[in-house]
Image (tube, rainbow, N blue to C red):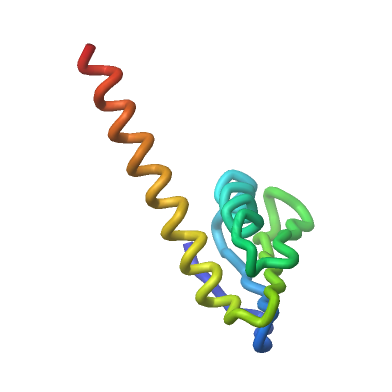
Length: 92
């Protein structure tokens, strides 16, 4: 995976996420939309097999980089919680 900030202002960012697909982008978009600071979170992928997704985030004035960091932390916490529960389930 490689990231490239295409455009950034105080409250908007276009971020190209090279080498990823709908799986990661849908989770990230959902985590972003759960944040009250986020007004818009969406992504565009022209063609699944030949183009990389571009994530667009618009905030209420918060730094979009901080918002994406927080969404990523939230996803990591959810994965950790799932792994804890899963490990308990398979020990039965």
